[in-house]
Image (cartoon, rainbow, N blue to C red; front, side, top):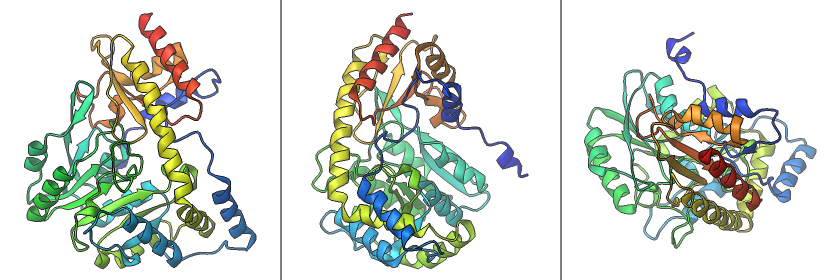
Amino acid sequence: MRQTVLDLEESMIRQVANAGIGRSDVLKFWFGESDEVTPDFIRDAAISSLHQGETFYAHNLGLPELREAIAAYAASLRVEGASPIGADRIAVTSGGVNALMLAVQALVDSGDKVVVVTPVWPNLTAQPAIMGGVVHCVSLRPVGGQWQLDLAELLGAITPGTKLLIINSPNNPTGWTLTREEQQAILAHCRGTGTWILADEVYERLYYEPSPKGAAPSFLDIALPEDRLVVAHSFSKSFLMTGWRLGWLVMPPAMTPHMGKLVEFNTSCAPVFVQRAALRALECTADITPRVVSHLKVCRDTLVPLLQAIPGVQVAAAAGGMYAFFRLEDQLRFGDSLATAKRLVAEAGLGLAPGNAFMVNPRPEAQGWLRWCFASQDLGRLEEGARRLERWLKR
């Protein structure tokens, strides 16, 4: 087996979850998903497809009607003056994870320099490493619980020798979101260096700041179709479809046929009945996503003040995403966030994700931090979780 694969670290989030398996008394906030079931009408579309016998292979790039629907949906979120998005720029993938891995496979050769903005979901640093890329991390910086980008540091790290920039906004775990001005500066700089941008925008609709389109700023608002830009999306978060494993990529038109070849060699295609469910979700997006976002904002605005009121906890409300990323201020007591998260499961019945899961070779910025997924139908669970954390800290 390749040494790179042997050297991959087990997910720290899974390590914490494994510590709580079988315990019904643990409040589980470690994974990034809502506890709300996929709406009936989406599930019914999949059932209908199965009843009709749609159990065969589909086109590598996805059902034509779904690619058209995704293109129309993506275009509907763009600001005035944005470049058009046609189906010739869309590939349907077997999940957002698959979308990101396909993009990395398409772009990264062994030895290529890849810059990643961290803290970030660990797959985004592991995927280029699996391909033999040399990963260089530029960290956001916490200021009073709010994470911020040092734009000059990021641009300085992207040189003509940088093959790919990977950036996740709105960000998992911090909720940090790129501004339009930052996107413009990054795009202009990468045009100059010839660097590709892989933008993970799966939380685009989970955005709580004023926005005329109900979406966070996207690179697709300002980029040209031929720019070296690939944008990854997923049906998981905004459409309550985490377990369905369906996503998509937006890319330059000339790249799409080649992406179809990669899909063939990875998964062949996404299941037709899952694509039918996604098509129904897009048809009814106005009945799903605004309600989801509204509820998540209530969840955020319930949990964050409770955490802010706990002595020794530092946190700011996230602009986007579905997480509260907070710091336990006593660094001497809470240096190793993985150990702290495991203790919280064992001693407080509270399941959170450790901050150092989101950094490469955990750096000081991640220590003492924990991620809390607040996507809960029952606000009482969030309130009880905060009480458990406070009691545990007092002990």
